[in-house]
Image (cartoon, rainbow over all chains, first blue to last red; front, top):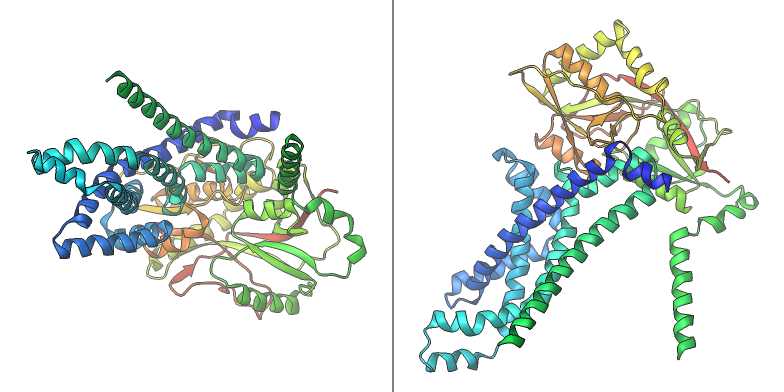
Length: 222
Length: 286
């Protein structure tokens, strides 16, 4: 017990961990936001009937989804954007946004494909405009189908951010590693770090469960 | 049905237990029987040397220093944490560290003890700074500062204060790096992976010997030193892409035959050494 206190709490050590956690959450949240927006756009391009755009999206998804995110991050930070003088966190957000976008695009596309095309045609024959059909028929269903996969995308994203120590960012993993070196107790420290990541994942899971229950309640009401 | 479930739970518990404790416990017992077998030694990898290159180097070390290297089979670890976990799990029998790092480990944790009978006397590594080749002005400045500190005794004082006489149970003192308004900035990569040299304090700020040294150098050069916390694997990339200007480097010169720039990458220059330390081996307490 004293050992755990010494490792994680003593002399404000928990504050340092909290700072690292803040960085991890910050990068994850921003990347999720931008990644989702970019991913939706990408999915739109991927589904479009204009062939060059479609091919562009296909190539983008193939490259980004197939490359290890750490290599992508190092390539951007130490290569492509090295001269731009951007803060490391910005580069990390860009990288993870690009990466998440590819995954989100694919998961949205699979959700679209799960839908029955006949529904849209039916909506169109009933006089809905294209936009209305999307907004009222397609979109709510995509949301429902994509939700579970989206949740695991978020959790994956949070775990991927643990490599940002390679680009001079002190995130949760870096803090944990520093503590492990300082205290010479790597096993306990890393277990502690793992529990923190686990807690975040559970939090995300909990939020999704809550929103599910709410939407169920709403359906029951109506 | 219930019995099956209970058996399953038990089995998984045993498995998990075996995973967590590692197979180290079992191996400890039958070690004396096979004393002729090579000793499994863990080392921290050198930044730019492949395992093959390291084998060549160690062969030369053996010739020069008389330390029998061939009795070890060596596993390389990326950093101290991994090395330590390798030792604790029994993947390696001994960990090769610098004396000051070993002392720190002994003071911080009661799991280890020093291997005393090895004659490692001839082995010593020096520590220096590495900069980009085109940064020769910076290298000269660093050399000048190191020379000055050597001649006026500041270096010995710092070594005393932060390595030899440091109370390892206490957190090392916070170090303020003097800031000069408008002066050019030298960015230095720290990893926190090698206490008490490369060390990150409880509050997340770098401290320890290297930081104290840099504070002194900043004062002498009239430049600002910015410490950048970075994963040790990315230091070379960060240096060559100008994200940082200086990294810490260890050189392994023994005698005449081994050049001091043994694992030096093409585009990197090294400063004069500022600290020298012996090699010490640690093992788990029985």
